[in-house]
Image 1 (spheres, rainbow, N blue to C red):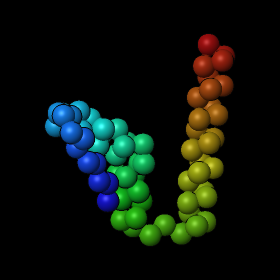
Image 2 (image 1 turned 90 degrees about the horizontal axis):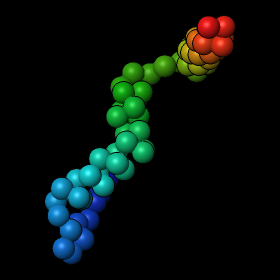
Image 3 (image 1 turned 180 degrees about the horizontal axis):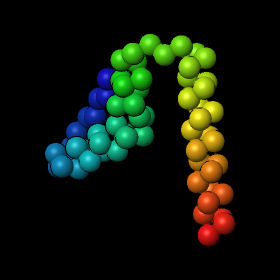
Length: 65
């Protein structure tokens, strides 16, 4: 759980901004979504390979244009 202490003289908006930044940096929502369902290691690896192939095709298309 993230804990953000509001410093003396700091506005709530500034503390909220720090909280949101920290929340993004640690990928909290992605971790929660990933843990929602169990994914077999072989399936996770296959998904990584498919994503890498997709990214590779996209970069090749950009270079060809």
